[in-house]
Image 1: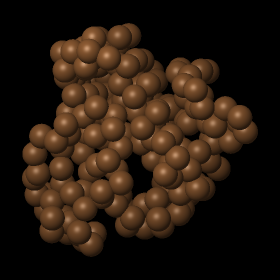
Image 2 (image 1 turned 90 degrees about the horizontal axis):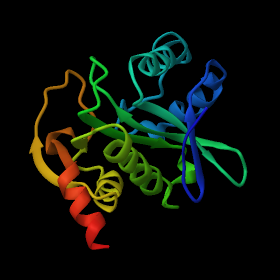
Image 3 (image 1 turned 120 degrees about the vertical axis):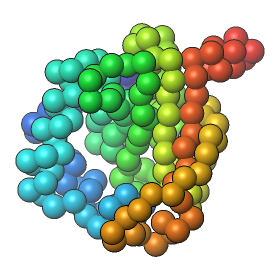
Image 4 (image 1 turned 60 degrees about the horizontal axis):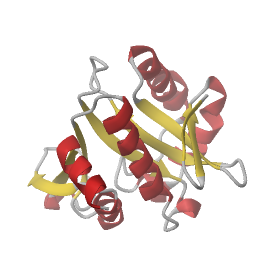
Length: 186
């Protein structure tokens, strides 16, 4: 089911048949470098990750959507506006994960902007936020190009920290009022 469409992307709901797509995405150590540091086991994708994605659809209109390149029909990753546990849409966490071969082509920014637009115009969202490792410069650039602004750096404790964890995590945000003011000034 199509959720969003951009010039180059189709964002659709995930389905049970997407297991292989998620396994391929999460098995690339480059993709997982700033996330878990290692590939996600297939069993975890089948038993936890995909069921959680599908469960979000039952709680409300926000969630994680498969990103498909329109010209080829190829799965290239996902874009999300992740709701809190209660499924509300007032504050949504922006996320994205793309296959390495899709990096550097503007897909994450294009998908993120479309998701943000949907949140503020259709879902009643008041704030979109995101976080990443402070050292994840490419992801920070996507957040900035998508309209979010740096809010803070904070430090979490991890039993098995990834390289760069000592520099902290960063949070970015965009409120509906900020988004509306920028949209009007264009």
